[in-house]
Length: 181
Length: 244
Image (cartoon, rainbow over all chains, first blue to last red; front, side, top):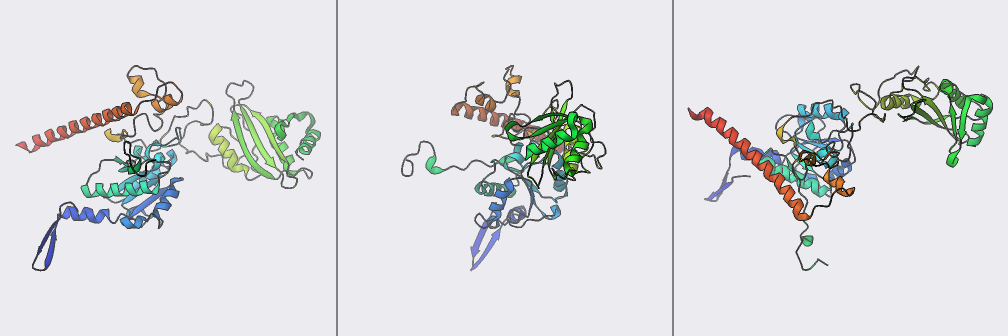
């Protein structure tokens, strides 16, 4: 939580914070998700939800197939022009506060579908909070996105953000030593 | 096997079979448009050839051809003899071939797809609607004169300042901006395609890492300046509001 004050004394502990911080904390650890899965990225989404990567660690394991019960809309895969109204409608039906994650290159910017039939990024239709690049992204990137979203929720920050590439310390330029052959 | 089908059609229809070929073992029979449905019906019903498996029906657009603009291509197979035959005809723009959906029910959706993509209507089809695209779509996109990047959005695109992609998304990334190098065009250059594609095609030299970093930094700076400006603007307006 943002500002957390722990007061100890007399064998008892009291913790003070602000109400908004507490609310944001509760929101970020109980994200109900609406998976709008249209394409191959869905495989990686399933892998992320499965036990090895275990999205349940972040309190986001419960998919809700009704937009009225969900907090975060995962747009997973290519969105064609014909699907535009459906995505828009689902987003409109979600109750505030709501967040949108564009999963993969197609949802982020249309990917290689440079043609008449694909929406060039779902942000042309609905506002997106977190973009996950990758074709498809690995589950690690998806978890990074979820953690980024949690940070944004805690900070009450609605600015869109792109998941940065993970740095592999052993391969960082200029680094010498064990592991770099 | 397939040759036997061609021979059978030749004896049955004689002069009405315009052309036959067997390039690479793919046997093909060309007929006139008026014989299209009749030949197909014969292929399905004849006891010797029994082409009972409808594989696909599609079209090919030759906009420069003066005689007839489209080729209509039917692919069939026999589950009895395993023969495969391609039946082809020529269709002018606006002509309506007879439907095959009463012969093979699988032709129903294939004909709808041909209508959707090429704009060839089928006479007698029970449900001549678009199948892949939406009713509001104008034109037929697999015709070669349809511009590939001409989207017809059902939902109007959002118009907000920050819809421009963030780094690492440049404005030249994502379709349909990939085709034209707007940054270069606006600066008076004549580069036709985006930097990434230009490098691939040898029109451009590759950016070094430092140049690319400078590029991205410039983008970030511009964005931040814009945001600061906006923040200042809102501050001024709220300041005025609560002042007195």
